[in-house]
Image 1 (cartoon, rainbow, N blue to C red):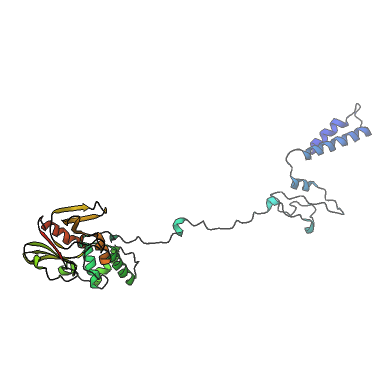
Image 2: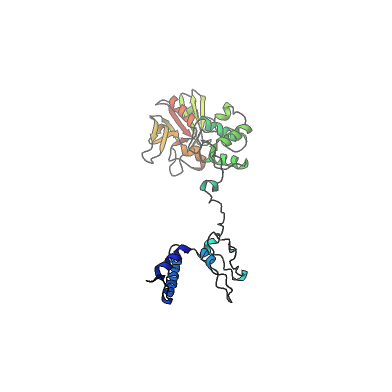
Length: 332
């Protein structure tokens, strides 16, 4: 409270009728001053630091607890003449003035892309099981040059070819998938030479048997069960030859002389529901035709009585040359 306020309060409570103060008037005036002082301290925002500065610097036997410093107080009393509190009585800093603990610095969580291994794209696959054509024939001829394919090329990519490719890949330290990808093909080209015509299209895997006497005249499909070969002959001359297989002991291929009575290029067996491409029927349901199973698995299987050919290109050419009425001779 300002001094002028105290004077005003004295005037209000200390003036009597004749201008003379009485003891009661002085007492009442003192009480009013104390009440105004109390109201001035209790109203408005509290400032504990400012209150501490108003405390009288009278010695005391027991020092009262020091008020918590204001956020701007540096803890040293700030004004001259104020009693300095012993260091042992300084209370701990207010929670509001304690700096928060530093948060641990953590790396951001790894993303899926950062965890995934860096892999190069897989090489493009050029040929796989089921492929067929001139490039398959070249693949087989090149594999045969370096001892990975033990048969004559057929132009069909079956299980035998896949196993030959897998063997080549494993020996060269690449993934042995059995499919011919660009990397495998480049390695094979670097290790082999261009196959000759005879390597690509050999007469047969097996030597052609001596022809039966019935094969020496006319147009004849001369088929030997002993050598397992078919020779397409015109007037005693071998035009082409190919490997064949026959029926099992339960479904044997008939022997004898027969005429070709029906040609069916894209035939499918109604009895066994299997494809019989380039079929040349000669006796009931028995025919000379291409067999994908024979091309893939070799002599490990048998037909249901037909004469299977495993070289698709050769039997396709044969189909175009043979006419209805041409002879079929099957013998031992």
